[in-house]
Length: 154
Image (tube, rainbow, N blue to C red):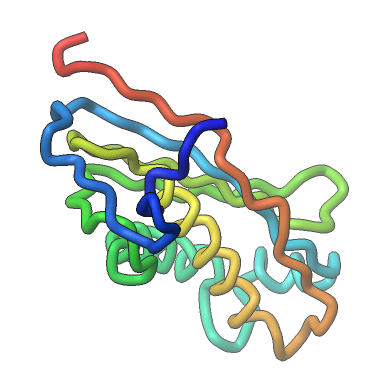
């Protein structure tokens, strides 16, 4: 079994030293969802939620969260991400908003935590903005879809 890189041999938490690793282009894509009532979705689409434009606010919150991931998760490296995108899709069932986030960087370590954080905070923002009208919302299915790395110029 592979040893966990964030633990010392005695089991104590530590930040991984990536200083000897080469800088490579990295991208991660994560996805999650928030299930909600069709009536809530209709309010979101018609911009009738009292707190304002839900999806625009959630997009900005997700991007901001990706940029702050190193401050939120103790063992994450603070990373100067070069791009973050948060998108929303509404399936034909009209019972949820699917949130997808991608993050890119040229760095010595991956950017998957930033993509996952963007999805999570975007979902929490939707929840916060809609909680007055929908008490049955459920956030879930947050997962990493892919992570890639390639050397510059390839």
